[in-house]
Length: 363
Image (cartoon, rainbow, N blue to C red; front, side, top):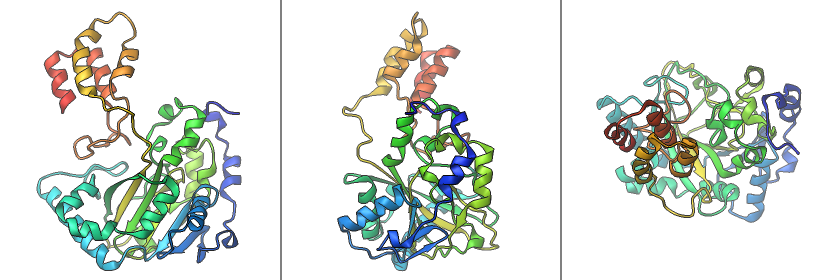
């Protein structure tokens, strides 16, 4: 059994064998259609264990993506769209250019942390929007109860370019070098910790660049390494599928699925989607810890510590970039902002004084 993946484990012929499987409608009795290997479901499914089990199979063992038609009522979507548009205009008026994982800041429009901004701006519209049985059905199927919803509004403007094929959070937000530090069983576990979704806030014909998907690609074990390699992204570019969506449709997919936003070739459509990233409730430490206070107290000691500074930092500082305030700590130079541990290591290496360290630490 593989304990650690290497770049040499990524063989395109093995990837092709996984991705060229066919999705059979007869295997999914509650689906209404298969389009380009993607399962299509109605937006009014009952929340039964049978249906949840079918969705689990679809996301885990099947194509890795399901689309629900008319999952959100158009009037509810329009009310949320108005809130999101106001938030975007306020960002622009204040001079804020939303950083993006792939696009240059300002090329498209993005609202980070949109879920709490939405709730505070218009609680009633929020309640109508998130009182959604389809969302609850698929989230509970994949993650169980106690899941945590986050949301980022993404608007790809006319001319906005396609993203490079990638996998998603957690390991998909890491460089190849970072992902290689995690053992193989963590690569297997990562997709079970989150669910990706996107709600169409406008009609999205293909020319507007709806998301590109490679069905079945989530089943390729070393995929968190492979998506960094040009031969794999080249295969994606040649074999991806792209489904048009209508306003109110919702797509949900396994975060290990190779995917990427498409190029908006329209002349006037600002393609808006509410990107949902739903996390397992298990992604929590047992105790609350004030790590900022810890590293502040430890910093003078670390400056002249004779042993392994890295070991002390690993036991005290926050070594993971998320959850983050992405308005403040935007992932412009990569998929993730700097971690607290990165900051402490830099400060020690550059011999910052305590005042500078405290200022940077507390933002």
